[in-house]
Image (tube, rainbow, N blue to C red; front, top):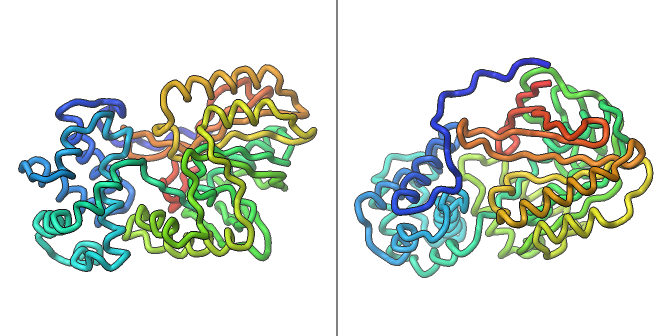
Length: 365
């Protein structure tokens, strides 16, 4: 196993911090996160919002931001605001934001303050729920993890269960084609092609098949509804133009056949699915990406307990795996980690560092 790359020296971040200083710290952390992940334009918007917050900008939106009742970083509160602003621009209601989104010089704080003042009523509902950041590029991580699991001796036929599925873009992962460091997977008539910049050795080359995909979300997004699709597009960072093409491709795929998503909380879903029979010679995979921070702690505990109970029943004929792509806020990167039973003994293995939107993967094993 190769050693992990040198990690930048960032201060440890408590995702669950709350209180008077927490909103400002959340904006600052999100700015650093955008800088680390190639999103300078979104960083400009966040920097301006942070400056307005520090300067005492008035209004209902900033009142809610200042008095955020929970943990603003865990709740991704800053991204709720940027999503609302981007939605106004995409809808043609705030064309002046184009100066920032095109990377042109502007008085960012004054420009954004004016937009908020004129459109506050439209922006306030964006604070009511977490971002929907469904991204097809993350499917590369899931496929790479399945290649690795097959190389460890797990049956190469996968039953995929996803929590926090949003619009189910990653539930259509068997319809995409992948080039993962030269290892190619997927159908000839793929809905889209994903080829993240690959660092390190390639993943194992294995023949794998996706037997089924099923997911849940507390508020599923219907990709075939233009208004709901626009909401998803609003959460795409504007500088990542390739993601808009991927979203359009995912919409076309959903129009052909919708992904299977049930409106259910994550814990209820996992408990129900793990209690259902598992087909022989299949590997059952619980998978999620940029979701765990939004799952309430009591549900996290129930999911963990359900997986612990299910692992006791896992066999080499019917193994169980847990694949996660989640943020490490101390380095502003994402980890691809895997646990599996019975062969892996439940030991967590970090397979890669991954860009949150699938731009690149740094394979570590």
